[in-house]
Amino acid sequence: MAFIDYYKVLGVDKNADEKAIRNAYRKLARKYHPDLNPNDTEANKRFQELNEANEVLSDPEKRKKYDEYGENWQHADAYEQAKQQQRQYSYSGGGTGSAGGFEGFGADTDFSEFFNSMFGGSGGMGGAGRQTRYRGQDYNAELKLTLNDIAETHKQTLTVNGKQIRITIPAGVENGQTIKIKDHGAPGVNGGPAGDLFITFNIANHLQFKRQGADLFEIIKIDLYTAVLGGDITAETLTGKVKLKVQPETQNGTKVKLKGKGLPVYKHEGQHGDLYLTYDVQLPTKLTDKQKELFEHLAKLNTEQQ
Image: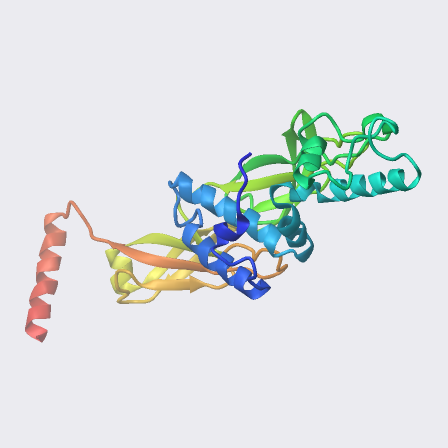
């Protein structure tokens, strides 16, 4: 996998503070959010890179490792442990070179060469008989969901690399959002810790509702007679049908808010967004002669009133 410069991804300086990183992420996440770029694969890829960069740079411990080890930051713990083992071995009289059977990190050894021997070469412990433990590789998976799937928190079983994993899907997750399942990646080497599993949620567009955060938007058709005279209608929500009273003389494009009928707010139990209805007044077609006569009469009355 090619190295990604997280600072360039967020467009911030390496000395940027937490506030600058947070503001940069929020600004770019809004711009490249999949909901605003539904058919743009490049924008979706950019959004995932932003999530990845923010996860690392907003965590002081991860950022410290990233600043020191760059693309190998995830192996920082293994490197530090191996270096400590080498020091202990040298102090115990093992020395370096063929006499001690140890070809590793000496005073004249270049850091990059040693790192390459650990993660890309033949191993750095030589004849010392000690094997460095390496962390396992991370796994990445995509989970396709619908708006109905995220209307409430629920458990779901996934199959990743032949293994079944039961996870909790939090209510209100965003499209393109990634969560980490610790220790569910590839097993470690020589007894090292397992990698992690990163799951990206792919939430399909809904035919009836449009989503913005936790709020939902719906266009609902009403006939001309109900718009003019008022009346009762039934509207669909994610949790079922509700009855509404349309006020007389309702204009086309009128918006109505149904408080709390949107999606749950992510990680805020008990809080929900709203559902916004826009009335689309439908004009009658295929009028009978009697209906046309009545409309002509109404038009005449309207003219007289003016």
